[in-house]
Figure (spheres, rainbow, N blue to C red):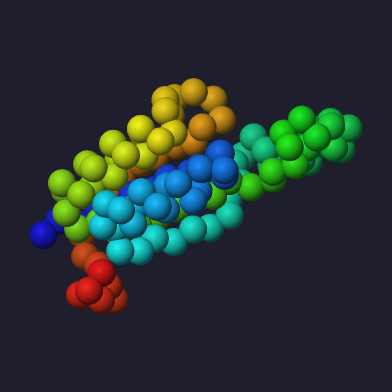
Length: 114
């Protein structure tokens, strides 16, 4: 069975719970969530003059949420991708996020119940 990893860099953190609920409803057994920061935001924060102003404008949210999960079923992967797109709308719009998948050669340490 071919496994894939799905990555979702979620710029709109207010959608995190909805995305995790969607994963659970569709049968995704686990995911890892990490705080991440894009290059543009990191550069903006290093600007001593405009960094504080930019934080006020951006709502003082310095981090994105990056979610990744291993999905072993192509049909489930398609449902998850479609569901995320339905929840978030057009990912090509600025500030929404980015989602991508990658095939995995081998997976070690994943329990059978997952």
